[in-house]
Length: 340
View 1 (cartoon, rainbow, N blue to C red):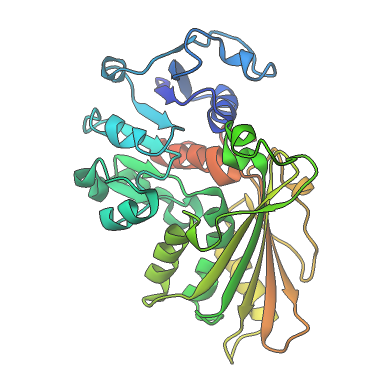
View 2 (cartoon, rainbow, N blue to C red):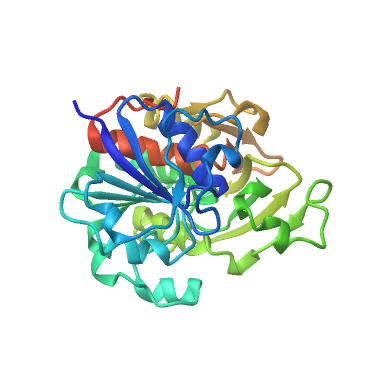
């Protein structure tokens, strides 16, 4: 089988660099072009000296001519760029997008949350919101594969099976998430220049955080009605990793044991999802630099409530790792190819 020819746009960002590290390990890919804006002419190992040079191309500026002999375009770009790039796809090519450009099904919602018009409305029906463990091979029917955000990944992997099986109530859900500062991108140091990123914890976004509509959309689709939740993100003094602590009310016929067994059954064939023993306290240390997601179901001091803990690496399972999983599903590679 010929290697799949790929182009990476946004190569020098935290997400782009991590993606390249995984693609280098993938036996089925050939990186043909690396593109960027502020990094043109540089080698990718300038941004991470752990990347082996091999025969990687220098970073160049993207232009539509580059797409002619490419099978897959990965975009790890600012919101809006993937809209433009999607217009150059032909029917045999795929766009795997790590931005938010195709996460929302409604152009009106995109305008509301991202304060700009959707730039490729006619492409939305050709896209799929692709949490790999949920959609699996369905990605084959779409040209545009939209990878979920890092926070929603940690939340949805835990909640979708429980809401689908009516084990938890669909209101009064409280989501408290803490992420390493790499989740804010390379410009994080400019955005938070007056704060000490390395020794302080910051709350941000609250009701206006852009992952809200993404979580809402996916939970509503499963529940068939509006799910009520509050989501509060925090920036933590660590480079990578996410812990989400989710407080939910049990349905009358549910229990902590039933919730745990439901998740085990849902993910028993998915090697990256680890359902822990009950009441295990999680740490990001166990998942950083991996594509694993650990989920622990914990008792609460309040009757008929439980606390769900989820730990992932925001740059891998929350981004590039599931991009590779979706790539593997598209081209029939083993699910762990490039992720071992």
